[in-house]
Length: 197
View 1 (cartoon, rainbow, N blue to C red):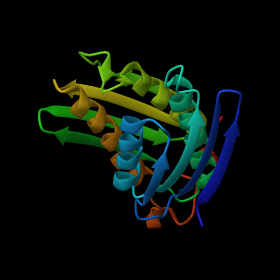
View 2: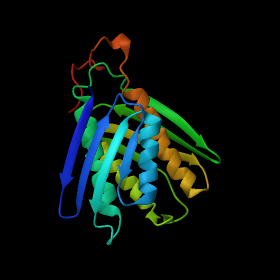
View 3: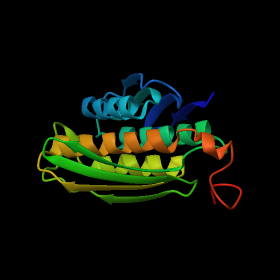
View 4: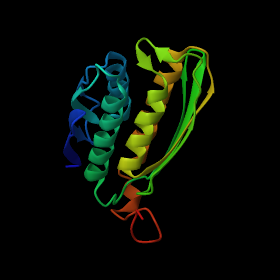
């Protein structure tokens, strides 16, 4: 079973995450940040990764620590669940449309973390959520998952739609990249013999 459970406890947050890479996209998410919950639910549903998140953070200050630390814990859980990454497809990309917005995601489940974020928002907030925190989440997630992640919004005007296309595009790419490729016959998909580093 490609599953993992991570707990992260600091003076700023308490995060508990459980994932199942071979799930159905079931989600049970409660971070205390409504729009963020909605985005994590999209991540689960469209990646077909079962995700459970419980987060308590210093949201009376702002949402930064809760969002970033959730990204860290989710990334660590993904890395743990993938193990040696034997047999995975590894590379994937997606163009995701939602009404007027179009976002591209390309990723490499390589053990080498990197984020390229080419997404701009015309407003500082979606509801009460700071739009700058989307990049913080994906950076924390990519660095701790050990994935190379490129996200670019090609066009769009509605900030809600732009954010949602980012999460859905990442989800669809993850779904393809972590799938077991039967032609790999259990091999690690690299000529080096191992991924990472």
